[in-house]
Amino acid sequence: MQRYFGRILKKAISLDEEDKFHLLKVMRARKGEEIEVVADEKLYLCEITSIKPLLITAKKEIKENNELPNYVILIASLLKGDKIDLVLQKATELGVSEVILLTSERTVVKVRAHQSDLKLGRYQRILREAACQSKRLRIPLIQNIIDFSRIDEIDAQAKFIAYEGVKGSVSTFNKRLAAVKPGKRIAIIIGPEGGFTEAEVHYAKNNGFLPVGLGNRILRAETASMYALSVIANRLEDK
Ligand code: SAH
Image (cartoon, rainbow, N blue to C red; front, side, top):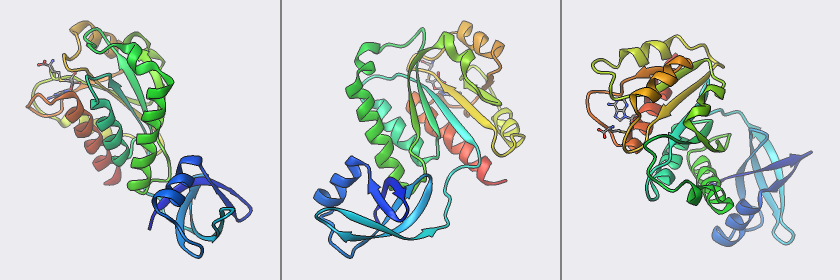
């Protein structure tokens, strides 16, 4: 069944504009049809009681929670081309709560091009679509681009920086994740195509970020995000 995001007032559901368009124009919904709507992070089985005007009624709440037991923040460096789009989509499927885009010393893309409202709108659309598709109760937040020097402001109890300079076993990452209590915030930084400088890793370390390896191979930045989030989701959901 199609899932949409909206708001609930008593039993009346109103959909977000984009979802309304999707329901009416793309899915060509009809009166009497049932849909799932997420409102206030709760899932409702709903019926379309009228098309013009669009009226949707919540029939019952469905108890279901596909969210991770922890708030997970991905701090992803800006990447060339459309690679961030892919990162956003996959990160949502893997349960991320928030994405913060980052510029660092070796960032090669023009930051300006990523800062427009148009881009942000596009990013939000990707997150929303992926959240619907992966049956989430939450659309991940996306934050404005920050510079690496501001990572000290990131509020999390378990903080990691993926660094290929950490050789050998991946157990540092796994062990630290195993010790994180449910509800605590987790953050992980992934570098740009050219990686981080030693000075940056040092700065991150001084600010409480644990350098962790993601296996013995060098991954592309977008793969590294997916790998890290897969490991995090796997560990958290296995508790
Ligand atoms: N500097 C490297 C590549 C960087 S890969 C080079 O050019 O050889 C891009 C980012 O992905 C890195 O900054 C890091 O955050 C992450 N990454 C890739 N492979 C990794 C690994 N094996 N362990 C930890 N992090 C990795």
